[in-house]
Image 1 (tube, rainbow, N blue to C red):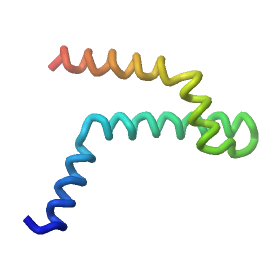
Image 2 (tube, rainbow, N blue to C red):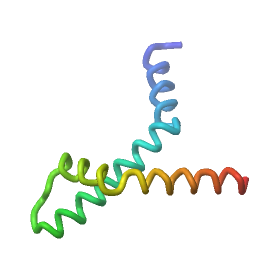
Image 3 (tube, helix red, strand yellow):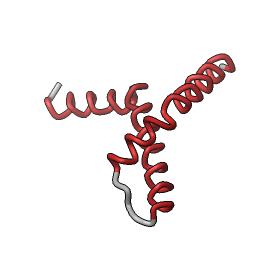
Image 4 (cartoon, helix red, strand yellow):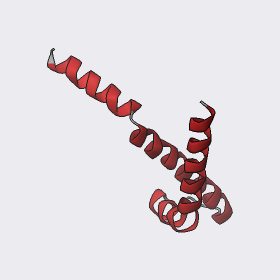
Length: 77
């Protein structure tokens, strides 16, 4: 298998992994939070501030909800 093809397969594996999908979902929530908080502040609060604020205020609840949804989907199938 050529190196370029192996790298493509590896890249596809990463994109299909559950961990990567969770990372993308979490990142999307942080970006939404950044937008909402920036609108409230009337200026861009920056990704780092939004990230830390979201982790402290929302992450545990968000993860609980995601796990419940995953269990429900698994039970339904």
